[in-house]
Length: 283
Image 1 (tube, rainbow, N blue to C red):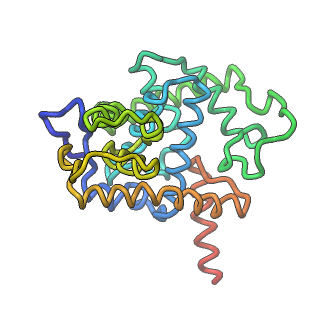
Image 2 (cartoon, rainbow, N blue to C red; image 1 turned 45 degrees about the vertical axis):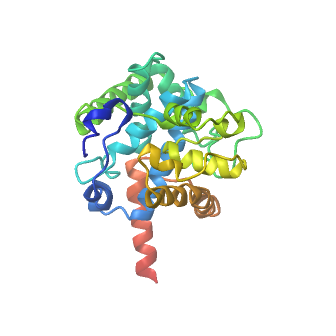
């Protein structure tokens, strides 16, 4: 990945190169790009849900999602035909929490993931397309045995080391939340509605969208240039952010409609690829 601006290291992230974005290890291994996008999207949602159940702060969860996403980038990144999304998600969250002021134990992480990945107990639509159970399921369906825990713990620690090696031990993540609030103060905006609605995205584009949605008047002129963002870049980011809702709606219809879970382990990914190939041959 391209290194961040050396003068703004604490405010910058390493950026993916065009080559990393165009050819992932998963794509090279035969995973269709649309399937890869669905699986990685589900992985970020799984990470978010697990972080909430572990009572981690949102900035820790967001950092874990960035680490999770970086792992799959480029030909040297992880492949969905080698590493299971559920394992990488758990390891990214465990690693990020361990480096923060809210470390959590392997047992807590694994217990939460066992619950979220249980097709009988999970509230996640992409794990349990039928919806959360109306009656509380048996605890046996989402409780790790001691032997199961020890085995899962070894996998968690192994994948943690794989993530670190893949990222060259660069776990720095700069989030836009604090930057956005600083920019709002610089612009003289005190509208709490705008501040609350600033999403986890690049700060300037988030402020632009939130201010328009709340009909909040900002300063005259092209204020975004003060923060080193040109009009073309701002427009690209705004379009990208506004397209997120449509993408998620399409993903829900694509997977929840047929009522099948998104594959989150290697064996399920292989089976889905084989099924798709057989359908194409049948046509």
